[in-house]
Image 1 (cartoon, one colour):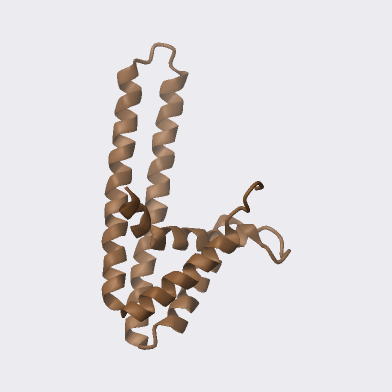
Image 2: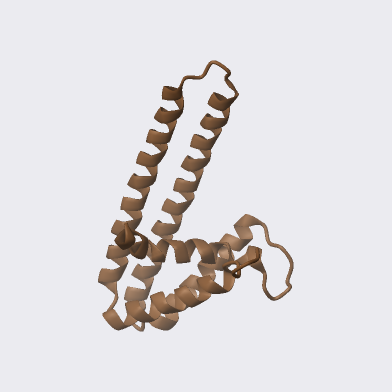
Length: 155
């Protein structure tokens, strides 16, 4: 479980960066979701350009990052659909427990499949980078993600 959480850092960093515009810590106002996503992608691509010195490998790493982002988007959309199904079943007075557990099982299976795809992409990106580049990139992403995370004791 801990290993999976550790391996998902890249996906979480990409997601956090995609949401970066919403946090707007510089007082620039709120961004819509698409603008925040574009800003996060641009920030992450800049990090890759600064970290990966070989332009061809940087281009490949950015392509893998885009695949991760697409998978995260797809996973979020799928999750919303499962939540909508839960709302419908919950509103049904005669709904049976099996109806809920089927949706939950399907949702968990979809999440696991998505996580597995993201994990595969993480290793694909790692294979493109040297250990030094990987450590630098993930370190910068961790620091950036922390800028946009809520502070302890507040929102």
